[in-house]
Image 1 (cartoon, rainbow, N blue to C red):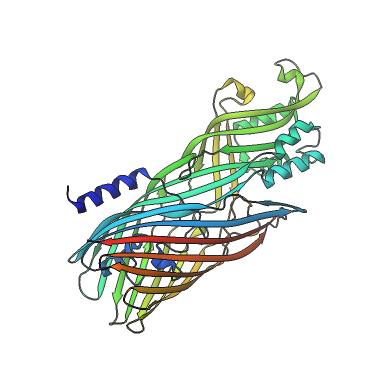
Image 2 (tube, rainbow, N blue to C red):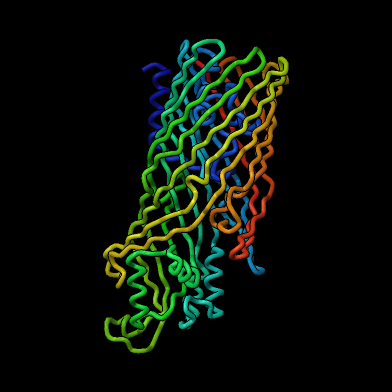
Amino acid sequence: MNNKQLFSATLLALAVSAPWSAWATNGMNLEGYGPIALGMGGASFGYDNGLAAVVNNPATLGLAPEGDRFDFAVGFLGPNVNSSLSGQSWGSDGDAYYMPAFGWGRRDGDWTFGVASFAQGGMGTDYSPGPGAAISANLMSSGGTATGAGSPLSATIAAAAGLQERSEVGVGRLILPLVYTPNDQWTVGGTLDYVWASMDLQMAMPGQQMFNMIGGGLISGDMVTALQGAMGAGNVNDIYYGYFDFSDDNDFSGQARGWGYGANIGATFRANDRLTVGATYHSQTRLKDLHGSATVSMAVSADTGWLGGGANSGTFTDATFPLNGSITIQDFQWPAIYGVGAAYQVNDRLMVVGDLKRIQWADVMEAFKMSFKASNAPTNGPFAGLTLNATMPQDWDNQTVVQLGFAYQANDKLTLRAGYNGAKNPIPDSTVLYIFPAIVENHYTAGAGYQIADDKAVNGALSFAPEVKATNSVSGMEITHSQFSWQVMYSQNF
């Protein structure tokens, strides 16, 4: 096996085995793919930016020089998320996420092809304990339970108050590009993408909120019917809180997982020696439902006689049902993205770039839907084998993203870059959640590239997103989110 074949085989093996995930910033989408583009605000549709083109605009691979290229990159995202309500505040410990990416491509005459793997995006938080846990405990202490009939014990309140809450959503792609360069003006190309997604979620929900969601049809299923039957029969007279828990310890993937496919197409047109324009369309993904194991706990006030398997006694005590089973995340998809851009070579040293793209969040983020089925374990008691369906409205808006930047070649080896990336927060105030705070808007970026030798280069970029504040119009909870990120990449031509 020669060196080129070894590079290709290694890349393919790594791509198949590595479930990269990311926590992102244009909603859930990264603001820039690859440090060359990130250094210029993410703008990438009209010039050669390496193997990151497979995520940006695949047609720009046809602008690369003849031969083979290998890119290996590592990215870091450091979100700073805080939530507050009624004088209490919580800070997310999820403040450091790492993302590898790599690709190999060959330009051979009119054709360019290769393979690459990139993190598409996602989001994440980690509260220990969480806001929902504290709210549940506070409500229980003040009698604010589902019906007000129960009298929560101090141990039940303490258990609620200590619950961890976290989320991790990650989407990655293994990408096969093919690009055709028919003449000196045009390049056209596309990709076929194997897409995977994973999710972790630990979330506490006050009984009062659960009761309201049941009444509104947002929580349903035969488990709810059984619970309503138990309440109607006097077996249960109050709901204290619920806790959804599907999470693992893997830094690169979540407990609930699914896979599917997607596709990208793009083109570039060289208008003259200085100006190149580009356009691209990324299809909405076709992901299967995400599946994993889960535990759903319900804390209630229940009749002691019923709990013992006999007739109602008229005396109530606290009971927690830990329901082990399976979770299904239904119809989670990544949105279609399309855009146009241009690169203008002002002179031999200065290039100015700009993109405008649209992310169709409204088509895929109308609601978050999950279905839990309890197993037949004896500890599940009266709810064994039953199903609980939950829907959390999202109603995200579509995003228009502006990406602007420039690259200045300081000398034969060093290139300096800077840029701006801006988009409005896509999440309405009525549905913004402390556990899914994808609200950042503006990003200011800078970067540099250094040509180590004719066939070797390194590139790096920094990105800073100033703090954005959002307040849930229903609960009154205030959420703030800022970010700092970086990417570095080593490139080898051969």
